[in-house]
Image (cartoon, rainbow, N blue to C red; front, top):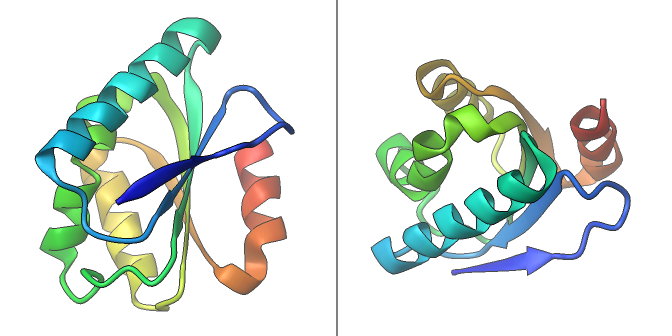
Length: 120
């Protein structure tokens, strides 16, 4: 499940809160949302906030849930992921490597750093 979070600081930033694994239908909806924002503003920046994400125990689940980002990688300038598990940092780095997207991982306590990085 996801919800779009208002991010008035920068119109190029698409901020999403993800609380459960994403269904195929939700992944498709996110792809359309990303496409619309990229059409309007050019390459966008993603700020993904994983809160209580139950599927964080497997890299494959995370990769599957971020499928929308991989499909539209050419429209993404950078992606910051905020989570609550230190080992997710490695998975996000691998996703960035294989997805061709500049990525960075931040703990929830470092939200200000995530915002600074995504704005940079």
